[in-house]
Image (cartoon, rainbow, N blue to C red; front, side, top):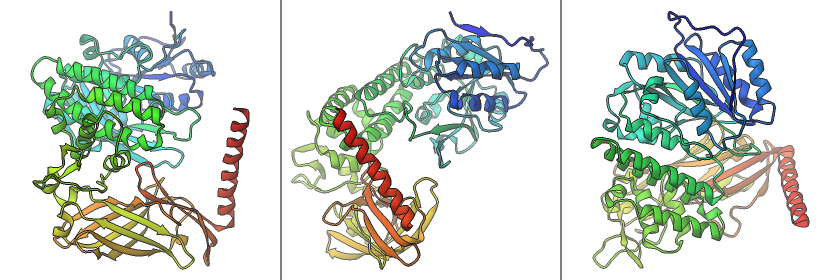
Length: 554
């Protein structure tokens, strides 16, 4: 039986007390971050009636930290689970059962609530008499602090959604933590998380919530900060995707979610179920497809078979509802028994999408993915606006003392590029961690092979930039007045994608390393000065020694 530790001075809350929210914080062996999470909930102010901290049988001293926090603030209630559940769902369900306030929220031990989050959600829920209030979550990359909004299109403005099917895009936000729920609503409809070791439990919980047809108040305020620690010794579930079991868990959670939505009373559930499948194709399928080129042969085969089996349960209308890049990927997978065209699929899965050569057509001129897969047609490319076309731009960066030369090569796409008339390209280098712009250049396109390729060249003074990784962003401008945001595909070849140490009047020396990201985009890593070059050499030597020791002991 779990142990609930009451605070010795805890008393019944008077009816006149404005504290109406229970915040459920769950954690397992996260002593380093747990206190920050609990304190961020307490700092929300008098609206918080209690912080229910559920420890999932930690062995790292988390229980002692929670006991200390409870001694300092009577609002902290501690639940110590005597057995580890293996997942996040069971401890959250413990919090639902223990909650005493009219509303509740969820918070993970490695994240925080920003100031004013509870007040913003509570005000919206009260104003609209809504069972659920939901706000913006930001993913904060650590240690850089760069923040990336999660599903920002859902939270452009404050509004009330009277029924979820009136805003199908709600299925894109599968998080449970950026929302305030009426406690009685969850209990009345039996809305709970899957028990035990169930990865992506948020998918199922959120589907159950939407299927119960609540009134949902949306606010544009940032109400949750999701900490992303990519360098952590143990990656979070959302970042650790190297094992095929992760994909199996994701597809199973999604399958259950779709069934829950589809079985909801009324026609609205079917509309939400279709939107959920379209979102899977556009988000999950593209994300994992981008990673296939970095996986081993056995993983690829298993992933392909699992994905093909799952996609075969989708209706044609489900795929038609998805944006074009994911739809094309799904149809290639369904059309082939074995993994194929992985590098081309990697390019289509990128954001923005790129369609690499070849560009075959059927005898009647219909664009197709491949001559041996004529059933995978690409006729949408003939009518799609230029600003949305998956244009392919190759990039070659050659470092030198006089300035690094970036050569861009834009390829034709079924006659659409020539019709638009390539004019110029804006090149911007963006700091990978902070998103800050570092340099911008503009160059004109010239015809290299008439009707087939256009090239542009710019000289980049990389020595003026900081020691960091810089992403290369492009904006293609055409004579017909249209524009397309894009990236450059990193071209491999003699003298390309190799480290180079070049002399620099400003820094003495500069290490320049062009490389391809997981999505195949061209980026560049810079290390200016003797100290920067030495640091890179030391880190590389350390990696080589570690690999050598691993090989020797293996």
